[in-house]
Length: 115
Image (tube, rainbow, N blue to C red):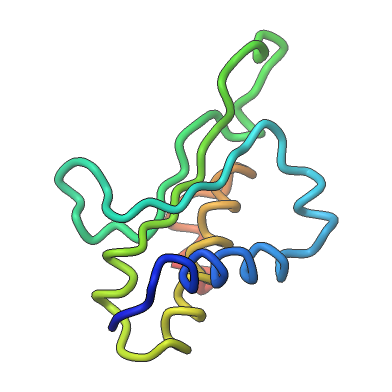
């Protein structure tokens, strides 16, 4: 599947717009990025949350760089066959990574159908 970066970033923006505002308002100290490829051995990783989940933040949390949610364009395009599949997969990936920020673990996301 081929989709230029601007269209892919628009799909990410649309996915973020679809997240209920009540949840978006609860995101704390998070930046969302689009990158071409993941670093490291997991070359087919669609998204990655890096940071301290809200459920793990204590009184000592503060003065830290923002958590990051990264959505990877290359792996997403390789696994999809149509533009609509890309849009759908990006939406799932965005929700999945935001859920990690709220402390929802991988196994629970799979149970809920967001794996």
